Amino acid sequence: MAKIIAFGNRKGGVGKSTLTLLTATAISSAPFNKKVLVIDADDQQSLVRYRNEDVTENLEAELPYKIISCLGDINKLHDTLKRASTTHDYIFIDVAGRLDEFTKKVLFYVDVLGVPFQAGNFALESTFDYIQFALNVSQKRVANKMSAIKLIGFVNMYMKRRVRSKDIRESLEAFENHLNVMDNNLGFYSAFMDASTLETVYEKEAKDTAKTNFIKWLNEFIKLAQL
Ligand SMILES: Nc1ncnc2c1ncn2[C@@H]1O[C@H](COP(=O)(O)OP(=O)(O)OP(=O)(O)O)[C@@H](O)[C@H]1O
Ligand SMILES: [Mg+2]
Image (cartoon, rainbow, N blue to C red; front, side):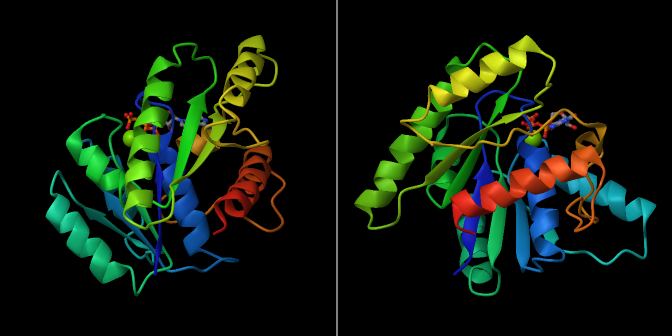
C-alpha cells in the first residue's frame, strides 16, 4: 500500500508545491528509487505546468514519476488512489489550502502532512486554522480505524541573519503539542525556486549549500514520517 503524502497550509505561497516537487523528485531518484505518483489537485495546476515546462525544455528526458491532474473530483481521486496504491510506494497530492469540503475529503486520504511555516510571516492564524482542520480530519480517520495523520511542521525560507527567522522557529516550537517539529529549517535558495520535476537536488557528494540543506532536511523528514 502506498503512503500518501501532502504539504499543506491555509497561507498561500509558503512552499507547498515546491516541497511536493522537491521531495517527489528526490524520492523517485537514486539513492531511493521509489515508485512515486504525484496528483495535482490544486486549481492553479502549478505542478502540471512545471512538468510541461521541464519537458518542453528537455524533450528526451526520462520522467522519474507521473504527474496527473485531478481537479475538484473526489471520485476520480478515490479511483486513482485505489488503482495506484498497490503499484506505487508514495503518492503525493498537491491541494489548495482552502478549508473546504474537497480539502477535507482529500486530507482524509493523507497519511503524512508536512506543514511549512514561512519565515518572516507573523500572521500564523491561518497556519493554526489549517492545523486544527487537519487534526479534525485526523480524528475522523481514527474513528474509521485508520492511522492518525502524521503532522510534521518545519520552517521554510529561513534566513540565518534575519532576526525574524529566529522568531518563526520559536512560533513553530510553540506548536509542539500538535505536530512533530523538525530541527532542520529549509533556507531561502534560488535552487529551490528553480526546482525541477525531472532532476533531484539530492546528490550523494553535494557541496552546494542549497543541496546539502535539502539533503539534511529530507533525511530528517524521511525519519519522522517513517518513509
Ligand atoms: N526555500 C525556498 N527558497 C526560495 N524560494 C522558495 C522556497 N520555497 C518556495 N519558494 C518560492 O516561493 C514561491 C511560492 O512557493 P510555492 O508555489 O511552492 O508555494 P505554495 O504554498 O504552493 O503556493 P500556493 O498557495 O500559491 O499554492 C515560489 O516562487 C517558490 O519558488
Ligand atoms: Mg502551490
